Length: 302
Ligand SMILES: Nc1nc2c(ncn2[C@@H]2O[C@H](COP(=O)(O)OP(=O)(O)O)[C@@H](O)[C@H]2O)c(=O)[nH]1
Ligand SMILES: [Mg+2]
Image 1 (spheres, rainbow, N blue to C red):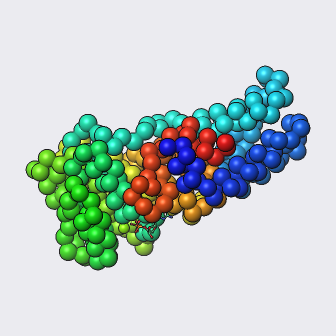
Image 2 (image 1 turned 90 degrees about the horizontal axis):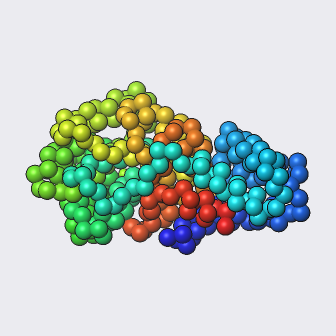
Image 3 (image 1 turned 120 degrees about the vertical axis):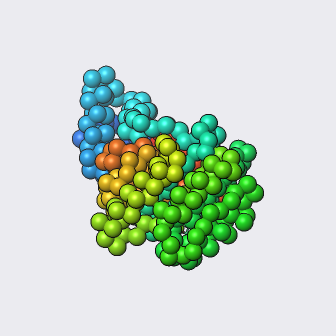
């Protein structure tokens, strides 16, 4: 797992880890040390607030405990970074007990929603779970076809679709009803994230959320917002839009393999307060992992 994660995060590791290795290979912890650490964390997109926070805590700890040893200092840095990612963080389970488990997947176009859905279906199938997908991105014909293609390659995965141009919440409603009737373990709903106007987006998403609860009490169980790690600080603004429409329960950070700025996860978590649940590190079905704060930081620093 950890080795896979290190491979997936190779770009961030290549800059962050190498620079930190050099920094912690220094002789002493002085003013310059902290300045350099600040610069390194900022360059990985950890964000100003979170970076300053981490550095202040580190400074305080080292001073209080009179620590001068750099190996110990790095371990403390690691723990501080792990703490930042904790809080409401639960590991996403591919063996759910709730049935049907209803997952809504949100995010603006191109962030990797449909790919993530296929990956999730694959992982649930691996656990012997029956999966149904809902083609809720009805705005582009290609979006439905894309989901159809993934479905045909997955053994225990079905698809509910309407014609393109239809009402997305009607698809979701039918899919929830079908999931119940067919004894499906997990229903995963795709949506369209058209950022045409914020008001429309929020309205459309709110409607999907309401309809889902109408079709089945307590649904959705999980609302995952997909964010593209390569878009950096932009993703934080996106999160705020979607949070207005419904109570997002978790984040999926995708394309971490494509960026040296994997520190964005700290900024996103700190500012939105939403726990990161899954991370995507490639285009293949296997390239999705439940998020674990400890492993993530370990993969960045060691
Ligand atoms: N490198 C990489 N590419 C990804 C990842 N997730 C998605 N993609 C690619 O991002 C593009 C958009 O993905 P798609 O699932 O269609 O996005 P959607 O519009 O949100 O549904 C596709 O070319 C995917 O192959 C990832 O974790 N890593
Ligand atoms: Mg899509």
